[in-house]
Length: 239
Image 1 (tube, rainbow, N blue to C red):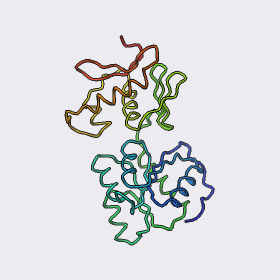
Image 2: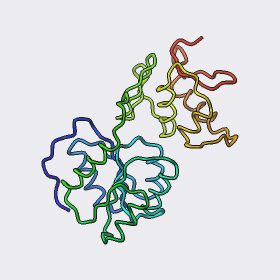
Image 3: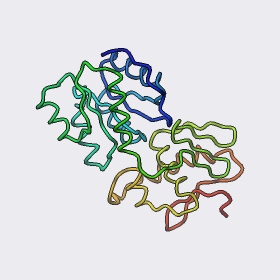
Image 4: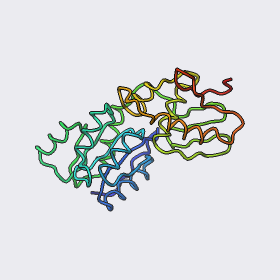
């Protein structure tokens, strides 16, 4: 692979997830993408990568095929089965025609054999990100003095920065996106947990309780409310 060329920084900052177990290659990719203006996260095995891809909000995934714990094609297949359509670029030393066909049929959107030019890799990532562009979405949600930034994954209430786990962040993001509306358990299961049925689990109650303790505890007024018999709502000043 060659060193990064001087390519202009993207106008809007894109979020990448790089799933690569080779430390030298992984460090190179993360550093190179950050230097040209991307937000780049790293997962070092297939299981970690799958979890991060499910819970994060990424524009493009860069996935190595040969990974520990779960191989790259298995990761991609699992994401597609769950309806996660984030564009995937497969980066692999397996570069024969049959290998590339297998990767694309597994759900990959592009396939770049190693060794590669970083300039070409960046260009391909930019093309994939454009495919993923839909109607413009807000990148920051605010309810009262609570603010969530989707790009930096920062949550602040008043002057306090809050630390949330990835699933808690997704839960809060969904609630704030629908601020002032009743959000049902079914809506949360389908959009935060990707379940398309109610498994009679208390997972929502547990996460709501944890989230409430982080965003409301110690503040003058609660923002996260339980609407009895209906669901949950985030709203400022609800009585």
